[in-house]
Amino acid sequence: MATASHARARPRITICIVTYRHDAFLADCVGSVLTQDVEADLHVLIGDDASPDGTRGVVEALKERFPGRITYFRHEQNLGPSGNHRFLIERADGEFIAHLDGDDIWLPGKLRTQLRLLEASPHAVASCTNALVFDGDGQPIGFFSNARSGEFGLADLLCRGNFLNHSSLVYRAEYKAAVLAIPEPFLDYRIHISLCRRGPMAYSAGVLAGYRYNASTSVIRNTNDIVREQYWEALLDGLPDVPAATRQRACADFLRRVAFRAVRLRDRTLFAKWWRTCREASGVSAWRLAVSLVNNVAAEALRQSVAAACRPILRSAPRILYYR
Figure: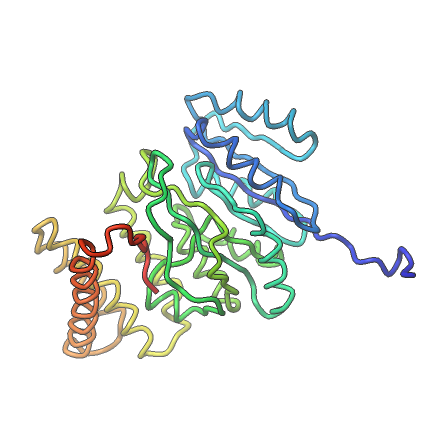
């Protein structure tokens, strides 16, 4: 029989939940965390970014339901998503830190799966999972990514974009300082890149989170130009750490996204601006970057064409939000 001194200690996980005008979703969000069946001590930090709705009342009811497990911070002035994240991360303790948006949820078995992944991969700095995607009304519309289970490194994130679901993120608390060192404002993509600069991300393709897509408070929906600038800043954070070929591929992937956006907006100046910026950052000749861009655009155009052709046939086929 094992003595108490040899008994395995339960890890402590701090879950940082950022919320703004999520009173309709927050009870499900927090409930999905604190009902996880996992051998760990869970503590929830809620950062309410001066919500003008009934968030305070929802949290008070949750604190009665889960006594001693929730710490609530209501900001009197709006900090913004990144400021709210930073505020909570600074106060997080324990062996692991998790992030979750107040309108998203976790599915049963999520934390147990991720702790096993991190235990089996001690070199991995963090873990993410796939997610079921809901629309603003809560109806399922598809999956977050088509990525397969495995490990992803910095090059994967730079060359294929932000295909990791942030509301599934769990990372070792020893890397907390790296996240706090990111200057504001920032996207969750930059957090992922900052972590992957320190080591790989262990990923489960299991659908273990729920992501609410394009809600009325979505940053991507409301501030596309600002998001693009912050997305580029995230790329710049990782480009110096990768070989020239990876920098070329990463810049071509970013330009492909800009090209499709410019076509939709019929804005040539948008592409011209980012062509110059990416050309300088890539460190390769204009024609090499152009070839990479053409190949990237052609591959994405083919994928979208095949998806459009199959849609009338596969009417119930789930949508993939981010392709790996």
